[in-house]
Length: 184
Image 1: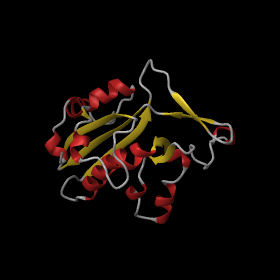
Image 2: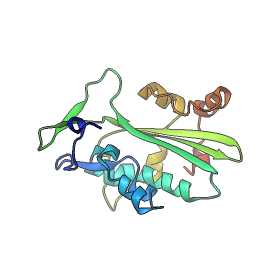
Image 3: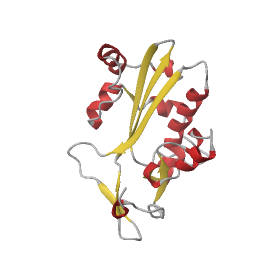
């Protein structure tokens, strides 16, 4: 990334955390892999209560499922933040004068492969304070309440997730989801 486009590591001001998109706890297999989660290219401005009390509940679910060898042979995870189409975004100004876009929404898309069978689920959440905090995190029911189909997430983001799947498989798994299949 050209130096003129880098934001440095000073953070996003006192109202926002440096929210990991790929959580540090997701990359414990080597020191280098874990250190890479602290690159600013993996950070997004997140309200403290959102990051520490709400987003973490989604991260915990992904980590729990990913570490369960009986759950899936492979678990693909896509995370990000965005503004909705036709909406104006907001920005945080940093001490160095650079501005960083603050997502209005965060999302996750999960694709599970187990014994050559596929299933998928997605989550779409508004970036706001849900009343949870560090030590008082959102319950699993709050995670389930944000579930949407991958098709719906594609409509909201304009991103074609899991496009490398055969078309018939992609169409089937992205159309719907079953909460119980995801321990929800």
